Image (cartoon, rainbow, N blue to C red; front, top):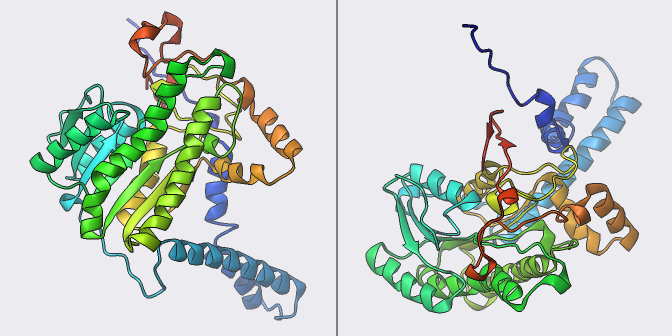
Amino acid sequence: MEEETYVDPSPIWDTLNFDLLMKVANNTLFSPFFCMLVPTFFIFQGLGFTHYTVVYSSIYLVLVCTFWAVKWLSYLQYNKTSFLYAPVPLEWSDQIVVVTGGASGVGELLANTLAVKSVTVVVLDVKPIQSQNYNINYYKCDVSKWEEVEAVSKKIIEEIGQPTILVNNAGVVQGKLLLDLSPEDVQQTFNVNTLAHFWTLKAFLPGMLEKKKGHIVTVSSMLGAHGIAQMTDYCASKAALISLHRSLRSELDKRYNCPKIRTTLVLPGQIHTPMFSTVTPSNQFFFPTLHPIEVVKPIIQALDNTLGETIYLPFYANFAPWLTVLPHWVADIGTWFSGADLSMKDFVKVSGRREDEGPVPERSEPTPVVATNGHAKLE
């Protein structure tokens, strides 16, 4: 019997994309330390300070340092801190984290990852999370309904304690043209994607205000900053979250006087999860599809830093807010190049189906994706 030879299903170029190139550039071309080495090297080679190579490389160094200085100052101002402020390391074992929509996708991975760090995790979902970790506590709850959130929140506070971190992650997508959306579709989208955030905030924010500290993570979408076809309800519901996040930040700073209750906004692109398993992939070099781990990592880092921020993923998501101020034809070219307006053409709703929608059609089963370790798996 011949010995089977394992063939890696993921060639190296499958993981080569614009995001990877930008990560390399951030640590080289756009790194102040790296840029400082260039003029220093030429000076030690005997070139004078007035030599054009030293002058131009020094000017570039100043520009790079200015960019990072402005970004850092903006970061400090957003968190109402100063240069003298040193973040207190987060004691993970003392945290109680509530994750909505934690039974699958990003929420499931986030819950399991935090549980490994000895964090007490509370998952709110309509279906149970598949996990054996004793640090995860599951509460069945339809977060789109205030009555259920109110009742479950009281139970959580009584049985486990007051949550210190809230991750609003639950979401649903219909993937229909505007005129094909039923009233039930629109209602479900806004109930889950938008109103659920209000209900969980009303339930858990008072406890954070009492202690004057905490962290609220709002998982929105880059589509909240730039809409595409066949996603009118989804884009509108996610755009509302961006405004909610900013208004909440103002209230915490100006009205409640609680700047240490941090707020983090997450604006990801397409993610390999069951919810988007039937979406037609876009150009993977310039517009790579994210794996859940790529979203979970920066969220945990933001929590660990005890500072709020806005997380754009992947790199192209940074340009989404600018499309609203640039000429319309620029946005049209970007959307055409990404193929976003046609990506939902063959979409079939997989997760979050209501009883009136029936079972999932066979053709909409999740398609195999390549994990970051190079092995194919089903999300």
